[in-house]
Amino acid sequence: MAAAAVDSAMEVVPALAEEAAPEAAGLSCLVSLPGEVLEYILCSGSLSAADIGRVSSTCRRLREVCQSSGKVWKEQFRVRWPSLMKHYSPTDYVNWLEEYKVRQKAGLEARKIVASFSKRFFSEHVPCNGFSDIENLEGPEIFFEDELVCILNMEGRKALTWKYYAKKILYYLRQQKILNNLKAFLQQPDDYESYLEGAVYIDQYCNPLSDISLKDIQAQIDSIVELVCKTLRGINSRHPSLAFKAGDSSMIMEIELQSQVLDAMNYVLYDQLKFKGNRMDYYNALNLYMHQVLIRRTGIPISMSLLYLTIARQLGVPLEPVNFPSHFLLRWCQGAEGATLDIFDYIYIDAFGKGKQLTVKECEYLIGQHVTAALYGVVNVKKVLQRMVGNLLSLGKREGIDQSYQLLRDSLDLYLAMYPDQVQLLLLQARLYFHLGIWPEKVLDILQHIQTLDPGQHGAVGYLVQHTLEHIERKKEEVGVEVKLRSDEKHRDVCYSIGLIMKHKRYGYNCVIYGWDPTCMMGHEWIRNMNVHSLPHGHHQPFYNVLVEDGSCRYAAQENLEYNVEPQEISHPDVGRYFSEFTGTHYIPNAELEIRYPEDLEFVYETVQNIYSAKKENIDE
Image (cartoon, rainbow, N blue to C red; front, side):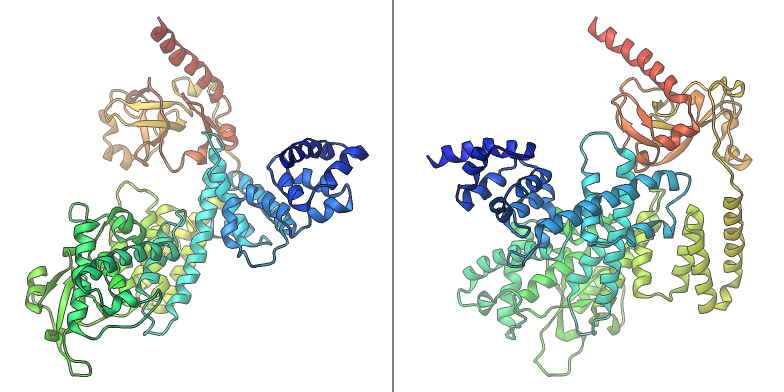
């Protein structure tokens, strides 16, 4: 009976949403239902927000059911933006209708800015002040971020340019927020020992598009702690650690009880869960990101030590971090409380080596050298984070294929957030930005700061200042957009067009063309270094700018390229900068690239028709 009433009313609601003056009988039938049934109907998912607005304006009864802070508008908000619900507490009063309006407005403004980026910044890297429009928007930042995430999650192979700039904006916004949080964290007193929290900030900054939170990582560690407690219960069912609650900072003083915890930890981590030091791929940045350490169950000495330290402390064992050269360690005190201790009163734990317990002499064997007693001392949170970021910095300098040097840029940002007056790193940052041709105004600010800190650097600073100013002047002199017409006589030898998927005849890589020149436009030194003169047609042939599947950008001679008979998407971070869509056979240029090559698209269609349609016909036969 009740189900029939609901079904009947469900048929009435769409009519109410469509008609300005609903029939009295239908309206009477609907409003006579209990409030819970009306809410169920209106939250069924069949009505849009506009429908709910129209329904609520029909009479007082429906207006009360659709009150702004009620279940109906909460459901509209939840269905439209489910990822935002985690930011609201069930006990808070929320005007859901107002939240809906604010989120809707934020989404429209965010999309407007994303749409403008390609036209504004197609020819250059987004400048430092390029994100000011987003930063100055009114409304909760989480709403803008959520809209950017929605753009990134759009299905299919379309809207590539939107996704490209949405990713850049989201990357910037999240990094700025994380960096501010890290700086506030570093202002904590020296006895504030949340090593895990600091490590998570580093992880978040280097992976701003990943959903990484201290809460989630702590929850994973808590699940490991539960397994350790289960094992510990088998060793000593009355062990005091078993009574510890979450967040308890109590420590166990008896060495034997501490030893039982460490034995249980070693069994769970290394035997049961199979955590291990990553000896096979040691120089991989993933080894330093705590969320990856937990997922992959491997890391390097410092990340494995932080995991081990966090678990041990939650179970009452007061381990301490030791900034040992070449191999980060933990130390475990064996001396009496209050006594004067030296380095021989500790056992040193190698979390990278399955929790092996070492003496001072064994520590020296581990790294193959004798070290002073000072290097066995405990270090604070800031020093631990400095070492983690220092490792990332070293890896960033080793980057080969990543031409954006993103890891190096991120690690420099982090290091300078902790130590803003490091002259050599400031100079490296200025040189990096100069090399990449980005942010010339910021380069000048960095150089001015270096000159203030160390006037002795005037030689290097002066050189960079001069060339940066020249770069700025050249940008000012650039006028208009260079348009290349295939019908132009000087372009008659150009055989391929932007958007085509090609294969390199010699090196075998797949790529997509995003630009071309009628002859090689590189300088004499590049031509000599790349041995262009050894090609049959030398440099007097068309050359193509291509995005390669390995993430690199290359300049390839026409005679070295051929059509890829099995075209596939090119996984390159800059594809969206130039193209709006992948069709399955080729890329479609975005508006800005099409302006520069207005006649290429028609040629691409002809080529695709000839190459791939002919292939399909042969297969069908």
